Length: 166
Image 1 (cartoon, rainbow, N blue to C red):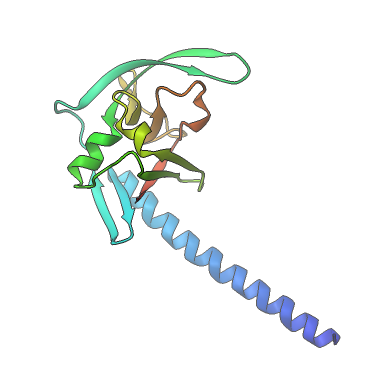
Image 2: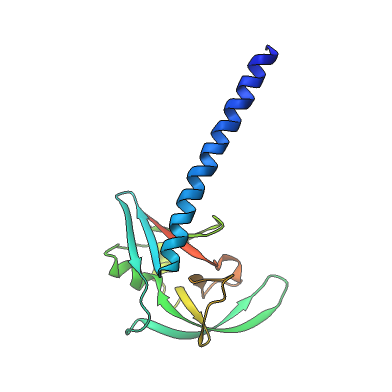
């Protein structure tokens, strides 16, 4: 292969990467703005819907849980928030045992949940308070808590988007 062809291919690849980074930054910026306004984006095959998170109401609860790490550390925590199943029902999404829900964090980390986990009462929450205080900036404004997991490895900080699929 000629040297100029190799340079052209490298330049084209670099251009593609630059375009993808720019598009991703634009989308991430839009998600950050929505979260700052107390909104979460729900994404389905049919499109996107924006949910305005509400404190208060019958399904906004304060609960105690333990954050367990694989190294053996255990931390007692108190959070306030809403079960993801209640939020999904309010958004008119039907969750079945075969559903797959993906919570996306601001850093693009994704937590995949099954419909069975979502439907398990007291298991999956979107929280916005730890104790009496709003979540710290590094954790929120929204955090995913999977209460019945043995370890806290699937808890997600800075949730910006929820993907719903069957």
